[in-house]
Image (tube, rainbow, N blue to C red):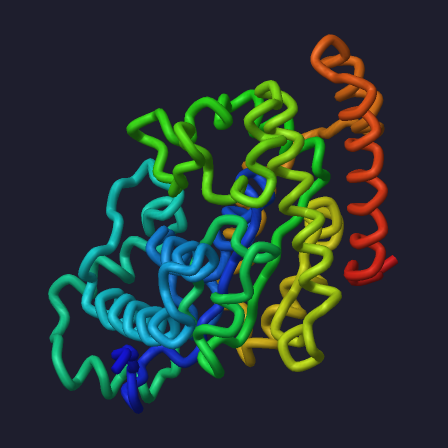
Length: 330
């Protein structure tokens, strides 16, 4: 008889927020203000959640066991946060409370009580637990469904695809994944080759591509899957998802923050305004008015006609999806 993991009726984390998106899409911009909303903890960066989803995606972890592990992991994470355990106090890290101006709150917890009083406080205060993950949406709905009713909001961060392709290419991530000891993406075996997990379904094309072409394929495949998955969701699941295009957020941040607060039944803390201003000033920069012209000119020697066409199709798909999901505020 097959054994299935379960969590039962135990529950601490009942207001989970997932912040998903490709590297460079603006997750740190969104996550960076969460701790300045009432009842919200600082955003947590823990790859284990996405690793579990990937194992489910490739068929190595059952959906039932995945759900039990997600619930147990998030409950434990919330309890540990409330007693100051496993908090990243490295000041220079984006995931540190020092970076988010929340260090006093978490340092104070280091000497607070633990045990049942903490459990009672969690259940009375109903805290929000924001979790940062990397490009799972589109490949799997495991995290969207695995938390069950505990998941209150799934933020899907998007950005102009050429901005992401250039960042991925310039960062050398194509060569780093699977070879750099400080890079922690999961890989799969494909014959004698080692590939990123997300290239499984287009492995042959990925293996024959140049570094630039692999960067294009990585973003294109993710976005095609993201758009298709979102459109195919049933209404109840779609209501949990908030797609945010970076370009629209930086133009109208207050409208998006109002939407997030409404969905989570919370309000801004007094420190919110200064924190958002700091984040916007540090993260936002001038970008090309015509991404295709900029990109195709800069990388003209690395782009074949086939990949130029692929880029144009990708830009068109992105703009159509952006128009579908943007919050019109003008």
